[in-house]
Each structure stands twice: as structure tokens, then as C-alpha cells.
Image: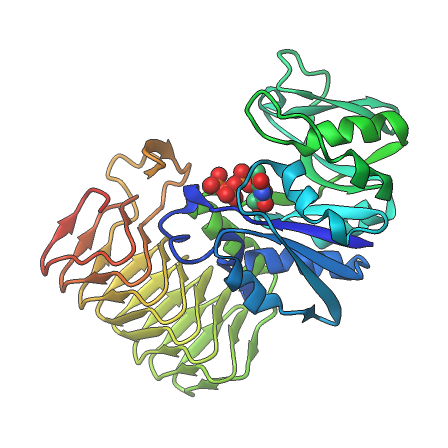
Length: 393
Ligand code: TTP
């Protein structure tokens, strides 16, 4: 089976982390977000990957190359994101039989992907608390006969999760009309498949869409928890690793460091002396965490330095960030209410009581900078020494 993996998106809700990196290439534990899905598809028997790319396409091409884990990889360019059917249409010339469509910014549990592949043609579904906000499956026994978008009175709470396996014939059905919201949508292709094939559904055991920065934290919490501890790098005898901690080859952990898993310390990272890293934390390649620094439940991307006397909690730091000595992230409001963040100009609740900051690539903070919960710093921001940053920059 061929797998079309949609990875053309600009990831505007994930800004500033997507300023230079496409969302599907953001790190989730030991690989990019979309590689988890590619790997699940390969484990389920895919023999060819077709990546639909657009925004910052080169980053995707560089990672997957022409062959990935022994599987040929092809690319389809989608210059404008005009919809999911439009995206699959970009891949059409490469398709020759039944094919799966998976989303590069969704995380699936691999077992469910396997089940989806075994029950082709089929779609994925999950139980939603508020099904009226989604496309609800219309079923006849085990067979899916349609999807009703945002029904007022849904008959079930089983909603479509998007991923599907389509019969080869559907290649000819991709030229759908523009929908009311102006997109070419795969749901319109599916309507024809429901009418002409017996389509089953696979209920996903676990699944999440990764659209906003705190969801990147959640994705990392999921995939870091799935890692088994292993030490391939150099860990001082006077450092303590508790729980599942991975120290990759070429990483160093100095005396006086305590790491509580799940945590992943990637190749070339340097931690300590005297630092405290708590789960679930990802320290990317070439990250430096120095003396008197505490990092908790955070994603710290490649090349970032937090060298002296700082606290970082429940935060996402982009690439090549530098925190001046004594930079402190506040990650809890005095009134204990969930922390809000501005996403595309709108204040949105993250739903998280503990939530720190989101810092774009190349930012440098001055010494003694204090960052308020939910603050977003654009790529390349500079703060002055002693600054207290309560608003996004
Ligand atoms: P979206 O989440 O709608 O878009 P996005 O990923 O660019 O994020 P944002 O809304 O924050 O800007 O897309 C969902 C997935 O589908 C994502 O993996 C990208 C993919 N996609 C395409 O590849 N091409 C398309 O035309 C569309 C609409 C989506």
C-alpha cells in the first residue's frame, strides 16, 4: 500500500516555531512529528511514501531523502494549500493502487494505523465529547455510509479523524468542486467512496492533532513516555538518572546533575554540572544546560543554550535560543487558572494550569529576564537585562 502523507502546511497557529521549520518537522521526542506517522505507516506495511510538501519543503526532503527506512520516497509539491483533496491530487501521478492518506501533523497510535490498513477501504474515527463540532459518522452496522458535518443533534459521538485508506479508483474522483469554505476537500471524495464501496471504520485508540505550541508539549509528553531508558553518552558517576532517561551517544551529563525521566538528551547536548532536568523534557542536539539550571516538562530545540542559573518550565524553546543568566520563566498564575496564549491574534486558553513560554528561534534574553506565563517571543527577539516580559514580543 502507498501512503500519502500531507505535510504542506504553513502551521500558522504554531508560530513562531514554524518561522523557519515546517510544522511536520518540529521535534517530537527522537524524530520529527511527521516521522512518527511515516514510521507507523511503514510498520503497517506501506511500501512507498508520497510526501505532499509545500511550506519549507526542503526541510522535509532533507530528512526523508529518496529512501527512508528502506522504503522509496516520492514528493509532490503543493504550492498553495487549497484543501485536502487538492493535496492528494498533487500526489496523483504517483498513485497506482489503494492508498492511505495520513496527516503529517497528527499523531496516531501505531496499532490503529495497522488496523486501518487491514480494513481497507476505511476511515479513522474517535469518540468526541462534543461531536456537534465535528464530522459525525453515519453508519449502517459496521459500514460507514456518510459523514454529517457539525450536526445539531448527532446520533453518535463517533467522529471522523481524517486518516483513511482509499481504493485506487478514487484517484479519478479527486477533482471535486470547491466547498463552501473555498477548499477542495477529501470529504467530498469520500462521499463517492461510501456510495460505491463497503467502507469500514477504525476507532483510534489514541490520536492527537498538533496545531498549537502546547500541543507540541503534549505530543512530546506522549512520545517521551514511550521511550525506554538507555545511556550511550557520557554520564558522570556523580550524576543521577531516575526513571526512563535516554542519553544519546555524544551527549554529556556532568557531576551533580539529576535527571528525572521521561527525558531525552540528544547527541551533542551538554548538561551540568549541577542541573536539574525533570520529565517530560526533550533536550535537542547540541543543547547546553549549565550550572544551577532547572528545566521541567519542556521542549528545548537544537543548539539552544541555557547556561547559568535559570528556570524553564512547561515551555517550548526554538532553535539556537540563548537565555542570559538568571532568566526565569513563570509557569503558574497566582489565581491558578489555566494559562492563555495568543494564537493568530486571539486569546485562547491552553487548558494548562502550568504553562510557560514559547520562544522563537535565535532569541536572546538579557540577564535577569523574567518571562510571564503564556508569553510568546518571536524569532530573533532580544530582551534587556532585568526586563520583565508580560506581553508577547
Ligand atoms: P491545517 O492544520 O489546516 O493547516 P496547517 O498545518 O498549515 O496549520 P495552520 O492551520 O496552523 O496554518 O492542515 C492540516 C494538515 O493537512 C496538515 O498536515 C497540512 C495538511 N494540508 C495539506 O498538506 N494541504 C492542504 O491543502 C491542507 C488544507 C492541509
